[in-house]
Length: 182
Image (cartoon, rainbow, N blue to C red; front, side, top):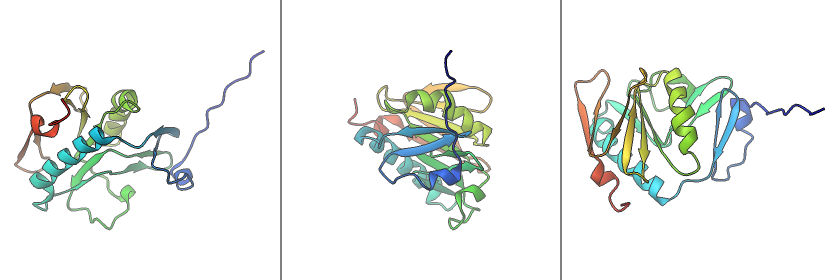
């Protein structure tokens, strides 16, 4: 007779006891996901996207553009998008769990997180109230734009984002974001 396999479940409090070893520790409904530290292509794409978003919405004082951000829902969900954009009405002195409006979550896909980010994490962001999700892919040189209604669009040239509650469209040329990765 076989023995049942038990998978441990974790809480946000448990994460505080994990080592600071360069890995990214996230929990989704209590299930732990550990991904290795990102490589140079991943970080280059994240930095370039964050720069463009900061120029368009962060520098104007209308939004916070944070990389790496955190979205939490106690007791057992703690996700860390590579970039998180939320309204400037939230003080940067608040704790992550006090921020309850998230305009954009961006994850840069890597070998260790590709399936998790696309198949599980994007849907979790929407369940947590994120308005839009971008999955940037340095390998295929594109960004998959995901919306809560299930709509997904793969963009290879010019990325356009309508900033919620503002009358502004952010335009990002992906040729510049993926430059040198071809």
